[in-house]
Length: 275
Image 1 (tube, rainbow, N blue to C red):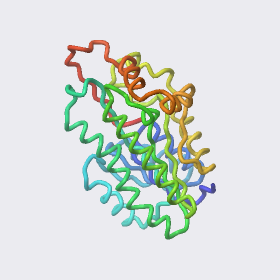
Image 2: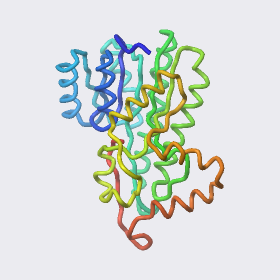
Image 3: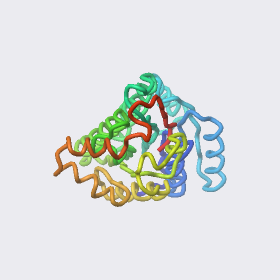
């Protein structure tokens, strides 16, 4: 896949996997549009991109938990006169804890960012890709998409949605010049874990660098695969629910993910936007 001269829009670009996607796509010849809530971080990264890679980098500040945000992002790129060839739906966050202790507004915002914004932005940019005869959509899902994840119930459900959505679109548009891939990373070294408080509680194994996640995802995109599971032994773990009863997997997940002070704890952990 030739990235030179293309324009890529990356959500959640202020840190983690989103920042790594931005740098890698710029290094491969794309001009980039950086979308996130934190304007200062976006501005700093845009300056780095322009100085290091001599590529245009545009900043669009948006809170994708708001229902009007995807349309506002699209209007901003239209105003800049940009045609988006590559859409990277990376923005996302998670919550952790017993479902009844988590702020419902926080969970609703997570669904908006992790799922609704992915659909809305794809609706805005996919038609233009079809008009131009080609393009790519990269949706960042998770290994959590393949099984129930107790104490992260809504997060896992949102990522299962992204996985199914991506594979469906891949089947619809693979013969029309559009490449679509769901990136399903295991634990990655990002801000995701910083507010979680204790990495050992999640028991997700060693964290991979976000740059490796990006390279593996772009390799899968170039091979026109519908999804890629990143990190061993998670490639095998993702296959287990196909042969093990789902109830068994859910009970196992509850033991793995159970907070140290559960039951009876009122502790609540919200994980910030990142991956």
